[in-house]
Length: 451
Image 1: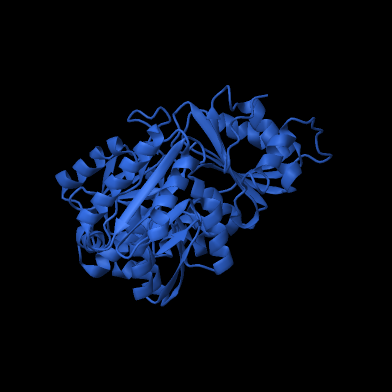
Image 2: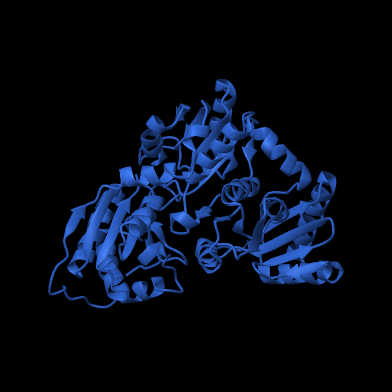
């Protein structure tokens, strides 16, 4: 049996050769045997194969003795919400996020929506799939669970509705599931929406939604300009990530959104801890300190961020890859809470999004993440550390290699899945220096790769 769909943090693979209903049924049985879960949330995204895979998964869960609470078509964050909110033993979301349209997958959590990854159960589930199964003495049952009303109510709890003012907002669901939630929120908010690719459609007529790719951004940017909107928002298919465009149609790097959200949370709470990833840090640290908070670095990746947030009881955690995590959302990521908070900030400040961001880009210009295919990533990173490390103010290995000087710093890290090295460079209020150091590092990486 092909089990290549099991990855480090979730399952993803081509349908039907890498993931199909037969395997999904076995995964359901294995999930119950490994976790001991008796009450499991199941939801699925808009992919054409998702209902059938979710049904087979549910059959396996019930055959192993678990009760299934079916929340139907939804986003990943609704599985997180329902698992935690209703005190379930676990939850499984059938989704392949932004993978190609002929793919599907699963994201699994345990009690309190704690992630199930390769180091705490996912590999055991994979290995158990290969062994024979016997039906449980008492079969589980399936029940449809309506979570939308409670979920919408929870989302609205993050903002002060009385401080909101009319805004025109471009929303691009990418034919994923986000449009359903925007429509459910609409009666509660004074915003006018310009809807793009709004209807859920598993055929993905406008391409698989992944706004982190530059080629998919133009339609949102153009609509913001054409409609004179206050901002634009685009989501991936299961809307656990959201991406922002200012009123000029400029795409805002996720790094600067992390700082803005951290500042907004700390203003509300009057202090607290904020978790951030190590790739780009100075802007976030500066804003958190100014707002009376404590900034804490964590290794990149949702399992690491969520655990560190729990350990520190942090208010909020953010990654520059557009994953945003919230203490009151079971420490999980949401693609809906961030845009509500940004819209609230625009209303309260009276400032356009560009002005909130421009000052931060000027203070801490950054290269954005640059990927390079490298034959021997470990060798290249070690060589660069030996060149730059001895002269540096500090060197860190929290995630990859971070090297800091007085007026600039960089982070180099390897991909978990491919021979790619990811570079991020930032400086203190010096765009030419940031650009020069970025070019210098890329040239050195190329030289070492060809050596």
